[in-house]
Length: 358
Image 1 (tube, rainbow, N blue to C red):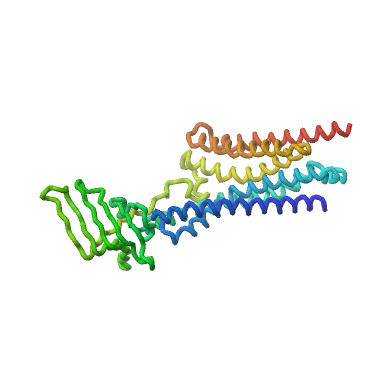
Image 2: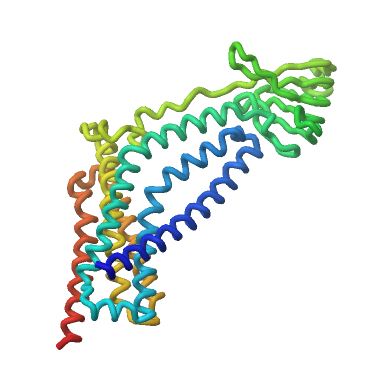
């Protein structure tokens, strides 16, 4: 029991460290992406952290299985490298007992992934759509960095500002071009800022001390107008309706037969927890099969099997959508295939052990 606890503790520590590292990488990439969107005015900056936090939450279902997979392989490889595994086997630790020890951790990981895929992720994905919609509708010229072209008023007009005021309350030396008019329609102004109407929730871009140009130059219809203040209403699109998309539907609704897309989504939500249980066990057996000094070959093999398993689930999901296979057959095929691989790896290890004893 002491040896099993030692191995399990080591795997938990290593997997936790890998999980933290993956989360840090994921966080830095997401922050860079969404802050770039905020800087270009495509997304309101006040929603960036909320969106990234939800993205981090959704990513747990993918990062937890990978962390335990890599942690299991790393720990067993390290035990072999320092000859600790030989001592453990000499003291009665068998391959089967190591599998059962890791299966406890894999079972917990599978429960976490099942909770994420069946309960948390659909709600988080729906909230993400709402936040992105609100963030995009709230994004205005106030979010534009100087020197960046941005479409405003629902994409009807192109906006550009040369500089920003020191107190960041308005933009200076601005230019607006109307893309919807059959003739040239442009405007320049000394400054611009956003005016919110608290009663209606509407937003307007206010331009001060400027000049507008409309019509074709050189014709009688060409008009130049100087103004003290000019207002442009900022149009906003409505909320995206995702009620028909299976990704955002609760798992209880997916159980009711409603077509191949619902069946494929249900298959995916149930397949990931099983994947999270089986994959680390495969990593353990591959690590046990490797000789000292050849860990990199086993690592490449383990990663190949990991992503092959994950891709197989994705392929069967697509096949279920197209009704090329039934939901039950698609759900069972990949797991039976890699479950059989797990059995073959275990039997091969046991045969090698008997051969050495004989």
